[in-house]
Length: 449
Image (tube, rainbow, N blue to C red; front, side, top):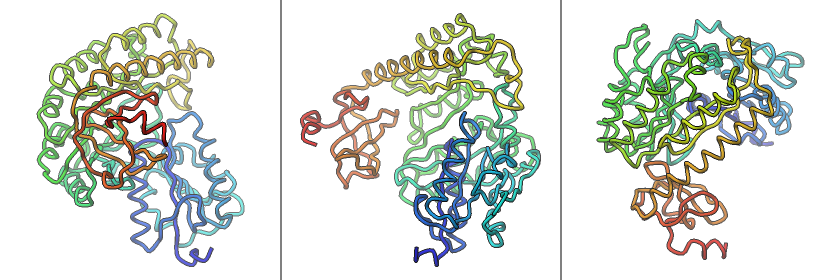
């Protein structure tokens, strides 16, 4: 443990792309202050765990990673931040091994808390604000992966969906300035990263709170129009965007763009209008279908992903089948399926019509099977096309993976010279692992590996 004479820090991130962007920014703060970044399973002076409140097992996951840290170095300081830390600071402070819990306002000031921090023998110290104090914006981006970066453009949410705790964990909707986003995007491109993924809690609401007020000085369309002009950037991917905020003008800009890729991820949550009303979503299924239709009209080969929740209170078998049939008929490419779980301080937790857990799991499985069918059907439409592929750095048993602009996952024999390169290749065959081969005799190659 000689290298502990240096100041060392290890990081672990749970949850969404936004958390990864923020962890990466906090890591740069620490390295700028003289810390050396090490793997989470190595001995370190400080272990920082960025938590998520969306997962059902937030507490269990947090405890597991605290134990990992304590195993790597029993004397290491453990700091918990993120959404779960904002929602349940007292609960987290009682976990054995936790020394410091930082809320939404405090996490970016972590350095000011570390200097005098000592290993706790009882409860961890809490520094957590009231969530209405989290009304400022800190720009962030992740650069851990050599091929893509997650760029934070927006934070918080003013929506009041009845199942969601994110507004309680992250506060009101607020945005980075266009100038700052463009500057960060340019910095990312200058580091040789080929793809940027725009992230936020509700990125379609971009512009609100841009200069510290509630007005929309700019819109999401303004933002992507500016980014589309930044020549150093090769690929820009839009992460999840609400259907009511995805305007036709934005879809048309992506269709004509040289940088924005034809890939959309649009939360649906339910195909039942009754349930959408109970969830307090801001659209009905008809608007959602219109958005998908518009994308297909101007970008026939685009990839369209969907978030959906099963087992929400009041989701009868009939209403679940409404969702299933709606998705089955829509020309989408894949699903992210979430099993509803009750959250404290949400309206849905008090609703009648609770769905038994085994039934929630059955419905989840049905939609995951549908997702695989949709994905394979989409991949099938892409076979024989010649498309640009961005290769990633991982070498998995002699195989490397990459993505086309429209999010088809492809593979070929590992070639170090291809890492972080874009190659235009013909998509040849869907393999048994659900990826697509761009290599002429790939089955024979696999047999030899």
